[in-house]
Image (cartoon, rainbow, N blue to C red):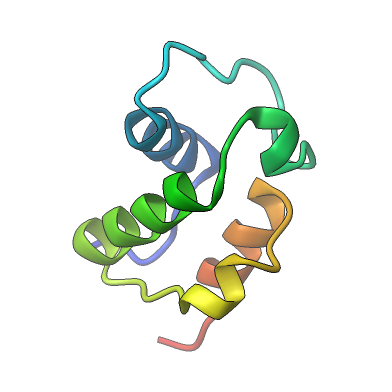
Length: 81
């Protein structure tokens, strides 16, 4: 399993989890999840996919305080192995 999740990896997961046609074009790193249209249920599903595909566990209490893709990527990529 790959340990590092890229912005493009996360973009694909977000699109799949939201079940929407939003392609999330451009640099979405610092765009808030609210502005991207992602609610807590979509983020919980995102966390489940990250766990399944990358072996990364994102605690639900941390999901609620993350505000952007950059914060989520930082959390999952900066964890000790």
